Length: 319
Image (cartoon, rainbow, N blue to C red; front, side, top):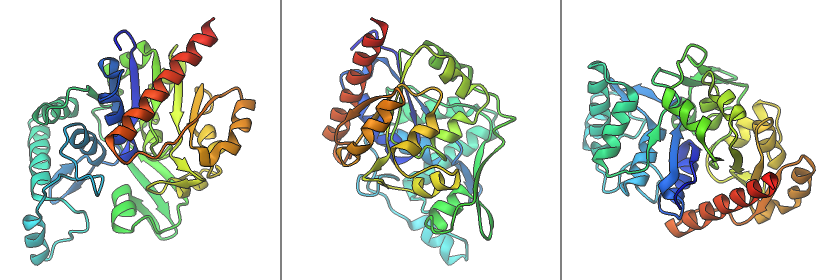
């Protein structure tokens, strides 16, 4: 549908699924995505952007559908050789995937902005949905555990999210310059959709960039969040531990608390329907519908519902 300007805030596998749902749904023409860059890190001398690459691979139909990340038809000969040479290989980077990281690293060294690099990769994979970065500067999520601080990839991949989470920090966020394109997109949006991503380390990292959160608050857009929880549990990832580290409950209330101050509507799964009355009492519109996304049809169906619901509620509020 033309004429509706939609921004998706997205991180992780949940963000990529939501992006795919919008990209192949009824409202694709007006959608832009702002993706998380704070999971980025360096491996084997190469700069890796896991969330951005998952977005690109998903939208370009190059994703390994079983894993939810990485390239389909992947091989790992380079990683095997690195292991034989005694190198740490806990971060699984396939041979096709490595080409992406080599390209990104070379471009960075030549002074090309991360936004332009992302566009180059998106073009290579036939992605038409614009992917914006909240900043071109380096921001990295750090997780404090009982044994000390870890990078997010160390916590998520190497340690399999097992350590207790004491604190989460976004290194470099305070000094990062927000991208003008992201700020402009937020300021002109009709709808802002928050994907069912981790509210702390995915969406929280985006909102940690100076002026990004304020741009969401100041926007006249209707803001709707899809809960990443089903039955009070995370579909994938450590959102439960992250919410607890911030003193929030692992339920719809905890998601609401993460976005309090700018949230207008929430989408929750029928398994959490008993929490709808509490949300409604906070002045939040609620859509109860199945939120588990396995196949593309699930993604398109859910995101079409989310946008239609938000547009309807927005119109009612304006009446």
